[in-house]
Image (cartoon, rainbow, N blue to C red; front, top):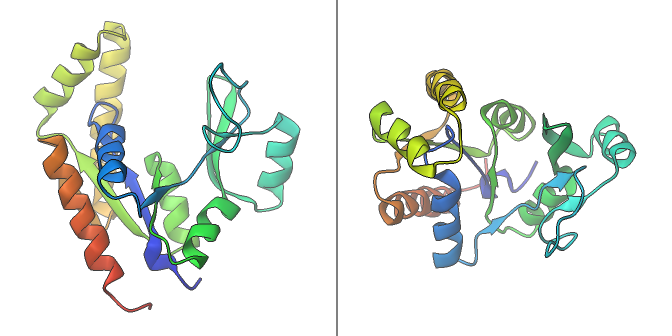
Length: 191
C-alpha cells in the first residue's frame, strides 16, 4: 500500500520503557501520531471513546476481525485489544508518521500486511537492568517477574526480525534515536 513508509512499529519486552520512550517522542514531536487501539474492556472513569481506546463490544470486535478490519490483536485478561485497519491507513493516506506500540506477534503480522513499515525493537541496556526495572515497579510478584524475564529472553531472540534496534539507556536519548530512524525513513522515496 502506498504510504507504508509512514508506519512505524515499536516493540520490546515489558520493563524496557518503550511506552515512556514513545510518550517522550510524541511530546517532543507532535507531528508523529500514535494509533488508538480498540478494546472490548469496559470504559474506565475519565476515558473517552475514540481517544483513550475505541471501545467495542465483543461481537463488534469479532465482526471487525472477521471482516479484516483489525490488523493485529491479542487477548489479555479476557478482553481483546487490537489495531483497527482504519486507524493505520488513515494516517498513511495522510502521509502522517504513525506509531503502533505492540507485542512481537502483532509486529510480525503488521510487517506481513505492510512490508514497507519500519519495525523498531527497544532493548534494555542488559538483563540485569531489565530485572531491576521490573522490581522497582513494585507491582508484581516474584513469579510474575520471573515469567516476564523468561518472556523477555524469547522476545529479544525474535528481535532479529526487526528493521531497527535501539537501547533504552536514557529515555531522551532513546527517543532521539527513534526520531532519527523516523526522519531518515521519511526522507526515502516510496518503494
